[in-house]
Amino acid sequence: MFGLEALDLARIQFAFTVSFHILFPAITIGLASYLMVLEGMWLKTRDDTYRDLYHFWSKIFAVNFGMGVVSGLVMAYQFGTNWSRFSDFAGAVTGPLLTYEVLTAFFLEAGFLGVMLFGWNRVGRGMHFFSTAMVALGTLISTFWILASNSWMQTPQGFEIIDGRVIPVDWLAVIFNPSFPYRLAHMATAAFVATAFFVGASAAWHLLRGRNTPAIRRMLSMAMWMALVVAPVQALIGDAHGLNTLEYQPVKIAAIEGHWENKPGEPTPLILFGIPNMKTETTDYKIEVPYLGSLILTHSLDKQIPAMKDFPAADRPNSTIVFFTFRIMVALGMLMIFIGLWSLWLRKRGTLYENRWFLRLVLWMGPSGLIAILAGWFTTEIGRQPWVVYGLMRTADASSNHSVTQMSITLIMFVVVYFSLFGVGLGYMMRLVRKGPVTHEGDDHTSGGPGQKRTPARPLSAAVEGTDDGHSDSLKKGN
Image 1 (spheres, one colour):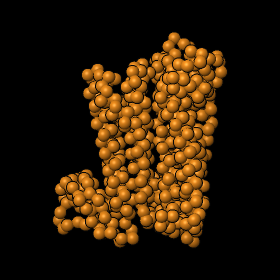
Image 2: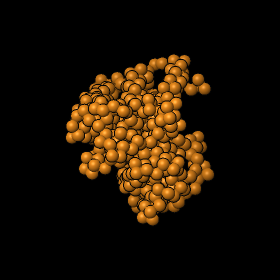
Image 3: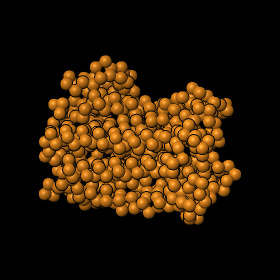
Image 4: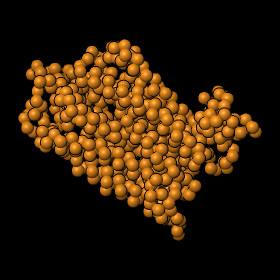
């Protein structure tokens, strides 16, 4: 298929499925905590705006959560089907870590998700809030175990190799490996930022259409406060993560920077733009700033960072790819910080909800958090190559013995099924977003479902009510 080998197709297949999957947990993590905050604020203030926003976003959370679970199951099977040699080599570590995720996070979420989504006014308010909090905690625990497993593949420790297999000897060292704290903080914070811009874009869309309600304004306000606070924090975490990567995976940093060789006694410049060429071992058309690479990566003006030519060619990741994916992530992060600061300036002027240039930019930045997450994952995973377990097992030695034909057929099937199935799910979720929150001012909101008293909440009932203004109007008119 296109001159690719079975290994290449296996990598593309896993990259495709994980790229689809990661979008859903990222929003699930952020929305779960957002829902917990909304319900907590409603219980504290009895402001109906918080309650209305809770019911609106719980519908979107339910759809997103379902798609995340389905897409995640496929990845688990791929470890056995496409990467059986990796599973045989490192399964004693990765298997238990993923099992711990199921036994803790997934069971916690499954135990309280039903109460959270369907138990409104069927259980006490305290119990319902506790259920929401447990679901939010479950998403973070899931992040903990997934990142522990993946971080161990980046910076493995706490093991011995016996008879050609990795055997854990210190589980605390396995879990809390050197890159784990930084990558956990970076991913969790990225999920919060991505959700903030998703929520903010939804509010901006409604405001640009003239729907300036208290709920919509509250959505934008909360999202921009989150962007203002968390986006700069993410930049600081990213800097610490970069220093950790420089210590444990220096060739990855060299590839990210497109830095091929050091000149004696000269500090490392920062290459703002260029095109790394793996064949000629140069970065073409580069625009660089002297000293800045050393300042950012070593926090000094005279130290050098390792260069790509310091490592064997067989151990170098593809600089052409990670050079650009890293810069996409950083550029979007800088733009997020700018939007947060702009929102503060507009808030002080009292024009946060009226400035159309700002609202248009927030709307266009809706998927920016997810794009930045994908770019970051591409950077860290492709930057780990040619290793599947860094320094221990090469990716070429990890794949199953499948033919090009087998991998081509399954890859095509995945592409068709994923775009069909998840395309429908994403389309439905966006229809819910376009509908916007329903206001229940002066209503005690004892109804869990539309028009029915004392019944469980139905988070997906918007499909019955209609998800666009025209359809809603026709229902009101009796058409």
